[in-house]
Image (tube, rainbow, N blue to C red):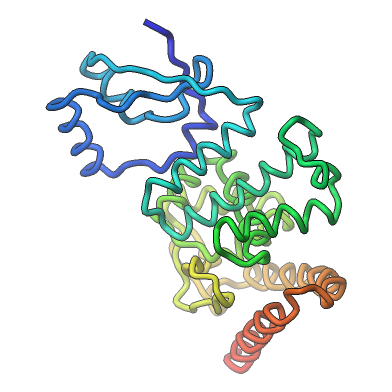
Length: 291
């Protein structure tokens, strides 16, 4: 029998099945056998991890098919497209997949390999415009959404490097985090990522009662990160100096964000950008009145 390798990166891209769904799959295989072949890239399993686990548990036979890819990055994109085509995924998972897809395309284009279009090889504005527009059309979202997804997915992966369990909880919607928080997380202090990962895994993280303003056309915004202490306290009155420091850091980041936005005011997305900014300004004014 061929030795099959489980790659942690590839497996980590896959949604986990809840106990009920896994049990139904197990019953089906026990009654009918493993009818769908496992998909391999060389000796590495890239599709069929749950079926493989069940077959190995009961020593059931299975078949395999092989696919050829030029790189690991190409495999990542194939896995993402395969999962999106067959599952009803949560907005959080979809956002993550779009972000990883964009970041992986960026790696491929930067490597000047056979998968790179001539117009996309340089890491410059040409890549940003061509690839962002193509993925936005493919996923039926705005170009701004693709950029936000890329930043949020980078933060989720950074959390996963510290705590794979925390990453799983985010993607499986066991904890709800505002995507705006994830978008800015990697630009802040490195220790903030570790603190967040620990609070999620230890289940001391709590959701704020204040809803954030979702960006227009963005259905995946699902709650707010609360600056909570280990005993579960939260909010401006309980957060103390730590919450104030976080707010100061966020405002400092916003100044950089403001300067970046000024360079893009003449883009084709100006109307959408203006609408998003107005919603954000209104939410800040409401917050200021409550303080």
